[in-house]
Image 1: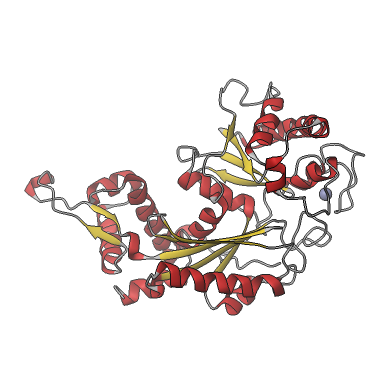
Image 2: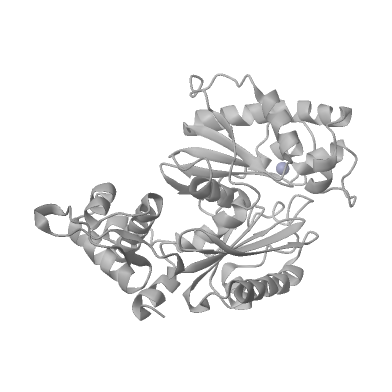
Length: 403
Ligand SMILES: [Zn+2]
């Protein structure tokens, strides 16, 4: 599939793009207030390194649009002027996050503070666009009715699914992908669903979700390893997401870790996800293609000898991948999560130690389990539109104010 990337003009130096800077600064102000709950304009200016005038202008704009709330004046303002604490107005805007994978469709609507206001989960079976789009539209309608929120304040939808995107011979090929999505682009999705849609990979959304709601809130550099039907990585580097030119950064499932090894649907041999993925585990347990090839079924299984053999065969390539990521990116941690049930995940992580020496070999917490739970991907998906610097819906809300 193609992605609706708001591409900056390559000939334009980013510092001269005033509209971009304004959107970026607005996001920085919103995010700083969200993380700290209540801040005065002076606090915000200090914490974002923006000038008091810039903060003042952005705060006025956001207050006017109903995205911020002004509290009771504090008496401790400089030169006797009362300082007004600002906080996020949860009902200032809403966003929908949808996670679509081989077997489930999870949709949430969250408010500007990140609270889930309504949630829908459906079982699906390797959904094509023809099957998924009506289900997503129906889920959106259910969220609207059940949450009873003012839909005029909806910023749009983040839709996430397994990658890679738009790669011939990889996208839509094999059991670890979703079929039929390669020709679909974001504009078509936005038209079909009647609201702005941003597309992203599940692993990238998981990284945002973990950063906003999980144990990665203090990390500036980490990689989220997402074990789904296949395997992907979300890259959070230097305090922001790194998506790559076509949103395929972190498609490490097809990184070759065993030259001449197991044949992959992509045509290569020895791809990492042939060893580390739910699909690889289903094959090891002789479940592949059967109705019992689900995370729920795995959760009910004891780790039997076939499972032990898979864990051993997965550990070595995964250890190698952690080493490559650390040496390449100088990250603080690899966060691991996804659809593998907790008991299996714990066994897998236990087998990864001791980790190989790398640029991070002295740190104690190089490898961490994700903590944001089952909805981490859907929450990250919803955050896509809230933190999208180019979201046209923001402009609509800012222009119309409270509505
Ligand atoms: Zn491959």
